[in-house]
Length: 118
Image (cartoon, rainbow, N blue to C red; front, side):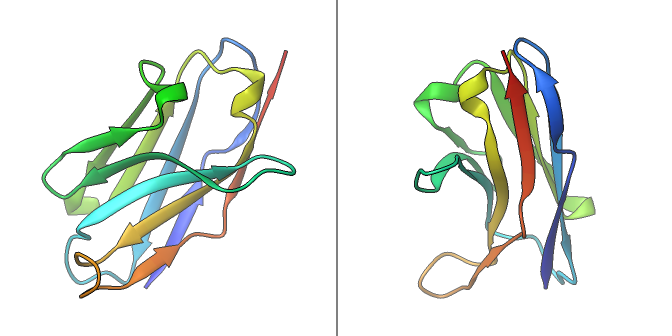
């Protein structure tokens, strides 16, 4: 199983970017999918998660600006990022749990860079 991200890039403040994460090799829907980010010199932080049933959770700093969604038939999660701010800059990592922990396993993508200029 491999998580493959796409969609990062450079954008100006106030603009939008969309990220995608495909779970390659999955035989069934992942219990949980999400996005983490790591800014230069900072620890990795949770941005948003979504369960297979559609329950979402967001970092307070992105509420109202970012939207996480998923297409279970395509084994894909998305992160729509609107009203971008320079502090959103970082490497964004896709995250997945195939089953509820501790019964399942965790998976990480390699990351995609998001850079927001002021």
